[in-house]
Image (cartoon, rainbow, N blue to C red; front, top):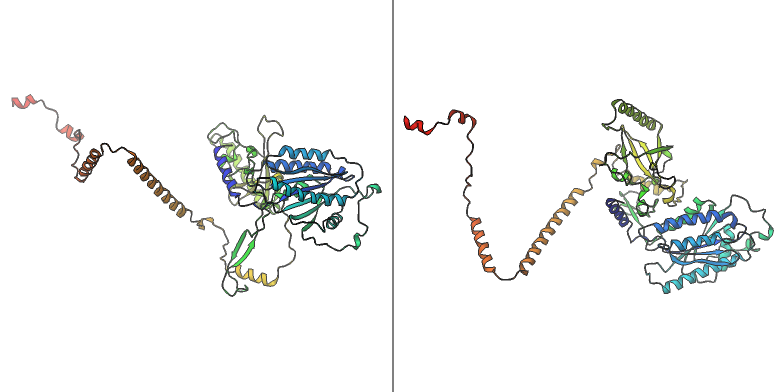
Length: 535
């Protein structure tokens, strides 16, 4: 990675400020690996865990997952991974996955509800002991979130946990999430000896025992992608101490406040993508578009005229209204037909016509193109990292290239879709506020002034003043450190120089006389002196 890219990466890391992610809870994962369902989910779950551990342990920046512990319920309760820090412990994390793979996939397990309750209580006690013996005070020791992965009925598992934890101390338990993995194959025809354990008095239980702890149920598909997305929920910022954003609208006549104060909408922010700059170990990810140098592969330079052009292969046609803008990132690059002088004139004309036709088709049909970077010639297949981009048409004879994120770096985003109209009072308030804003049919960014020049001028003047002050201070220090010998002579020389400087200088006399003009030189020919003496 070049020095420029390293500086760019460091600035992005600073953007992920250390003040964020300071309230990340410790995580406990309880895997219900009891037969016969474990044979259906072992492969996909272990693959999802491996992918997640590879990604999380490689992320730079603030700590998103401080501590992790893994329990497994098979024939008995096992703690496969005591609380460890995720960063720097990839070997132990992968060993935990291998232990999960080695668990028996056949047999019967009784008293699953008791083992689930015991796993939750053991995790709380384990965290308390860990915090008493650790020196890492930056970890939030007051809360822990427990996630249970199971193929059983999620409602049944929640009922079992509510009954088992009813009289327990759950002050440090922030949240308990039960994730039911939906199997593609129905297991209702399995042997009755291995059937799902269900309390006989479940129908007579209360709707909720209200333990004072947030308990949620989530249903996910039994695929690697779905389980990865569930685990990546841990990487979101989990603070919640205060709102992240205040969106100020003009005052509205329908506002409840009598004073003409702005309409304030309090919002939270959520990441959609993981920045590729946080993966410093993969410099060939190649999805930087901040400049043309970033877009070129690392071993190429625009100053070298012998490099091979970057190759992008079109893989799909996308409808413009089906592309979510949240998966596009980075700065766009303008793509235009080449004007390279080394091409033949006929070839350049044909290329220009073909490019014009592509722009016309994309614009008239409202299409985007999904393109993928081609691997280097001679490289082994599967050795590199592919980059994907979206090409869209513009109003001019050009295209726009934007990088698009892949599933490895995408964070889950489950936002509800509203099907109902908002209340009339809220609708009138916001509509009255927006009506006061200026309408601009065509957006012109040249009309926007960010006050950047004034800021740079002030900063430049302050920097210059500090440099001059520092130079004067260094000069005084050097003068004070010199020995006092000869100070009278120096003062005399300085006074003489000052005296000479006050006298008006005389005009300087040139060392050589100016050459006469060409006309005078011919009108006054050179005559020997003896000619005048004879006359």
